[in-house]
Amino acid sequence: MTYLYYKTSTATYNQKPNEKELKQWKHLANKANWRITQLPNGFFQTECLNPDSEDWHDVTRRETIEGAEAAIDGSIDHFSKKLEATKGPKVVKTFK
Image (cartoon, rainbow, N blue to C red; front, side, top):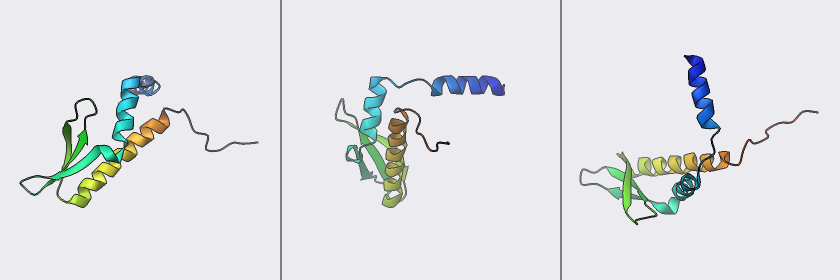
């Protein structure tokens, strides 16, 4: 069972993202494409702009505006790392 999980995970991990995925990740990594709205119940909702239709899509809800902004920052960090990973492995140490 472990081998099957490893094999499946490794196979999907090595696949390159297509152009549509890359475009979406670049869009989501840009903070200008995000906003925070306050709902009638007092919660704050993070929303992301859909580049194709100019509609806003809700993503998360948080109790505080600070929590909502932290959620956006976390999403931006996540998608920035995904974009960085598409450049291939990064050398962290070499030996002589």
